[in-house]
Image (cartoon, rainbow, N blue to C red):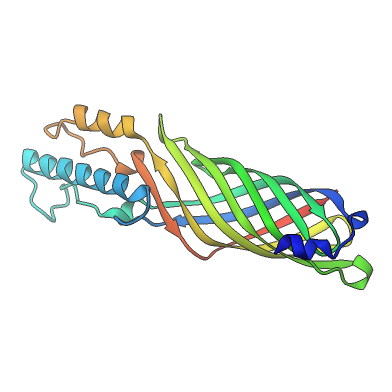
Length: 232
């Protein structure tokens, strides 16, 4: 379909522009047993933590509901909630109305780092007022590797299907409102889970280590992000 649309625009009008966006992405990934890839790891961590919690309470004589007891958890305790500030340098190429965008993605929050790429094969523009304002629509996806300050040997990733409405103002400024239509991702530290299972002693003074040191993640739909861009 894009080839057909592009055929109506002479190559003489094609150009390549550098673009740099700075955006804010509020991640709220929630897990469940059915979450692809992440769900099994979450269930394993919940099961291991609750078994250790129960053993700790028995070893110390704490009854359920006691202020000193270690409380059980469910999968909702292992969601990934972070606000990423994302830097996205990229290239925007094509004609006046049909274009293509590719970006590098570098994101950071207080605990999580994200590095990856975004590709937008749908990129439609409508110049107004002789190009003084150009509304546009992009749709595509991103793939990012995730890492965490709290995990030692983690495996992590984030896949997003994203669409956005934006406007180029003049030649060098752009504003964009995006929606993460579907997001799937998380962080998992298999070595930490095995280490906790081997070394934790419920007879000690400390309750089980926090399970979010082992796994965080899930799914999210409808995340709204905002960014400001500079076009070269």
